[in-house]
Image 1 (cartoon, rainbow, N blue to C red):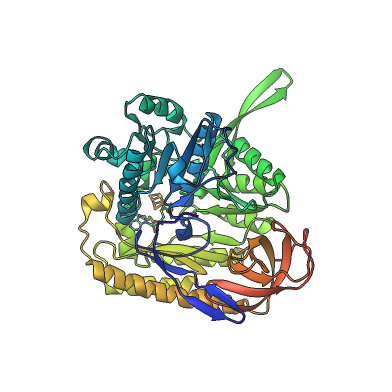
Image 2: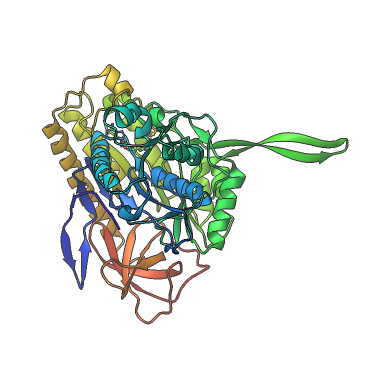
Amino acid sequence: MVKFFRYICCLLPVGRFQIFTLTMIDLVTNTISLNRGDSHDENRQGESFAPFAIVPNQYQKLFYIESYGCAMNFADSEVVASILNKEGFGATRNVEEADLIFINTCSIREKAELTVRKRLTEFRSLKKKKKGMLVGVLGCMAERLKSKFLEEEKLVDLVVGPDAYRSLPGLISEADGGQKGVNVLLSRDETYGDISPVRLNSNGVSAFVSIMRGCNNMCSFCVVPFTRGRERSRSAVSIIDECKDLFEKGYREVTLLGQNVDSYYYSEDKIQSTVDGQQSTAHTITFANLLESVALISPLLRVRFSTSHPKDITDDVLHTIVKYENICNYIHLPVQSGSTRILQLMNRTYTREWYMGKVDRIRQIIPDCGISADIITGFCTEDENDQLDTLAIMEYAKYDYAYMYFYSERPGTLAQRRYKDDVPEEIKKRRLHEVVQMQNKLSLESNLRDMGKTFKILIEGDSKKSDQDWVGRSSHGKVFVFPKENYNLNKGDYVMVKANDCTQGTLLGSIVNSPQTTDHSN
Ligand code: SAM
Ligand code: SF4
């Protein structure tokens, strides 16, 4: 797997296991996160894809695609792969043999952009060696940097925004003919609902399914509403069909993806037979309805979702989680800051107390619910009291995991226009370090509370360290590693595992009985 990010991670000896602690400091994207595999997985930054072995001469041309940013971007790369595949292009992980190189970009923090720029310069030298090779920029950086990349720096041949992937084949032909292929138009209705994504680098067990695109919130620090456009929901039928298809292909977990999944809203016309003939009525589907429909596909299909804005997650959603054992007891509920004053400047539309009330409500309805958060340190005007509020709210919520960032001013955002980025970088970083220390403590405490308990684990594959051990997850999203022993199990199976030992990032367990395919505990 090709990765272009650096991280600091420690090897901790735990019993007979050697486990990577899952706290990583990503020097490129100023992010610290736990490896959860959901909204923003630092392990996957710069990952390149190839879903299948290349059959010689099967494809007229080969493409290489490298992805950065959040899970939505990785899901988009699968849509791009599907579009290119239909046009006769095959995926390769070897950049040197590619005819087309794509980089699917993220604008969320400045350092992510710098990484992309560096990669583009590397691709430019490859291009000089291979006649006819095309380089393209996809995704969030496309709109903002199109003229810079195309005209000023002459780094690329194609620039394609997140809503314009259907035009890729035409743009490639234009670029082949020597013109620059550009389409960065944002759309109000594109959802790629009818495109069946090619699963890239999948473990064959869990898959991402986009349910909506864009965002209508205006968090003042965030560039997403500008790079990905207005919010729109994908048709429920196409989402359910995609999930059914995944289940039939052997997948056992889907994560429904959107910037703000709880505001999912789709209105479908239903034709009903009436005494006078037929009548069309509008039928509205909320996120709770959608969750339920996906859960009903099979009790063996686990359902996750990300991300929930605290202002939008409803009791209906919480009750639906409780109603279906296969909807995971886990909610990613970004807080961003624990200070009401800063939350107001961030335009998050809730106060510290309101957020704490939401955590209480989750715990009241789903007593056994994993909760994680996104946190930003060093936002404009943040002082030491605000930082103390953030540390205190983390303790209050007892987060199981967190994605932690220091503030990076983004051009065009409300914060950039209205406020001064006045917290010095070393203070932002020191506060980030404090937040990370707090999260390490909370994650360890959370795992220690699980010692001696038994969990239903979905096996994802061999552990990274040894093919004698399985790695899998509990409903709460916790990573378990356990010996295979003599059980006849495969990835995609469920098994009951008792937690015996832990680090802050991983639970070490042992199988307590044979696979439980219909068990309704945990
Ligand atoms: N829509 C999701 C939400 O509202 O929680 C997540 C969107 S964003 C892709 C993921 C996270 O990146 C945010 O929750 C925030 O913590 C972080 N982020 C966004 N803009 C940032 C910025 N300018 N500087 C630092 N972190 C930022
Ligand atoms: Fe950005 Fe806020 Fe939308 Fe999340 S909800 S994508 S942080 S504007």
